[in-house]
Image 1 (cartoon, rainbow, N blue to C red):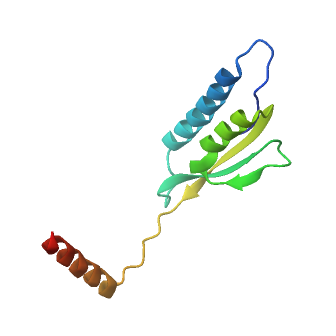
Image 2: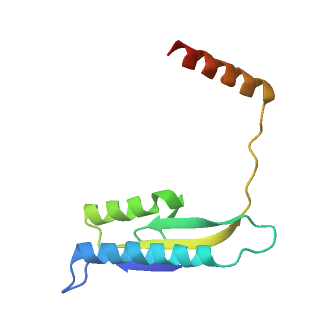
Length: 115
């Protein structure tokens, strides 16, 4: 999805246009997440770009996208550009250190016994 959302349209409330743009982004993401996962893929990840125009757009994390849209609406921007591309995500196991885990478990027991 690549789209330039206008926030100043004659006869339309600015806040309603901002809410409609956020709704459209959420709807696209929900639809993409419902799509069948290819073989060997754990989840859908999203590569996002945000800016005032397509040329000015920079890469952002998906979790910050709605906040950036709100900030653009509050600063009085006339429009903003959003690009969301669904990518294949594969979960990577966190490295486990047996020594560190046992030490943290022991320290947790000490803390709970002091209470």
